[in-house]
Length: 491
Ligand code: ADP
Ligand code: GLC
Image (tube, rainbow, N blue to C red; front, side, top):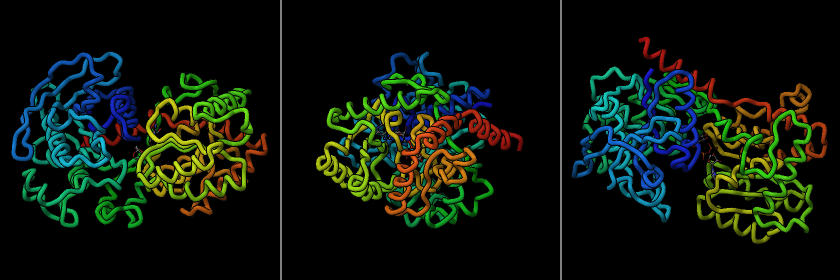
């Protein structure tokens, strides 16, 4: 089975969120299960800076807005990369400072419609070997709106290639105007409700849904939620009508990189079953607080640390966090460690809290891989009050690091965390804390309950051990993708 996997980001070369982690782990897991996989990404400046050896595998001529681009197809030759990587090199579109979607001031690149339309054309061209590489896939697997048009362009070719599209986040629809549609010279027959037209503009995500043979999303619960008005962002009718070709497949995690037994970012390593887990976690907590500049002499060393990592956007429930932190500061000994960046108002309010309570609220506005690992290990609880969460990876990392997550019952959070009810504790199935109502009081109560359990060492130890013993490896999920590909190959 030959798979061309495409996405707009991939750890460790370029990452803004969980999509990068998945684009790194899933292709490797597919390859481990026997598939011949190639990944294709845009040749962003940040990637080109990291690539040492490559060869030109071919050329593609691609129409853009008022011009044509001659794209080099770069094949990366790097033995440390466990995947075959192709890059679409068009310096005018991808070779610039900033992240894949935003300029250095945080605004969308004004030519994003062109950047990702041209990239999608390139991927479709590669799939039917317009670049003369000598390799053609059985399956093209695209991810999120940036590669939504791949399936649409493939539909213009008489190719038997199987088109799979994965939705990682429906909130980002790749919405553009009729003027952009015209400037991109997209086929006029696509301008219809049955095709990519969406509320008087057009949506690249919709193209992925409409033109693919099968659509997946990253958890079974999110697959159901997106067929409803509360979560569907206007796509619910379309998705509901296509439920027969919509499947939720849970993400896994890279359990080598996220392994508390070997993680080199930690002050002390530990593994499930080990007797002195809490001694190791205590050392990690102290190291974490030190890394955030806490005065360890003045602080109460056993007071719990509550961690949060993530994009500071509405999706992540940052407003709830901002409401509960002052109440928890007043009523408990809890301290907070927050790592993230995003909306300016959230950043400012968190900054104010951390200045007002410099001894208990620690904040790092920005991106840091080592700090993310240290927070997972050094916190006592991990907070994830997301409004919606297609899958979520941080709760999976925190389970593995023995840091019970407190999560809102939605999407992948609902599918991966078992609430520590009296019954689940008794049965030994509990792994964290799940609240149902998206409200600050519900988050507050869940944290308050979690802190009360933490004061019962025997119960807490069992909960932590159980959380650490959960398996969210990619193996099973990758097999589900392969089974899906095979189902279409057999047709
Ligand atoms: P999403 O993709 O919606 O942002 P996920 O939970 O799926 O959420 O994945 C987020 C990924 O990005 C995780 O690997 C998380 O550790 C990482 N991450 C998010 N923000 C930061 C940050 N500020 N610093 C380091 N890692 C971060
Ligand atoms: C998205 C979602 C997140 C998911 C990630 C990887 O960014 O917000 O829930 O884990 O994609 O699939």
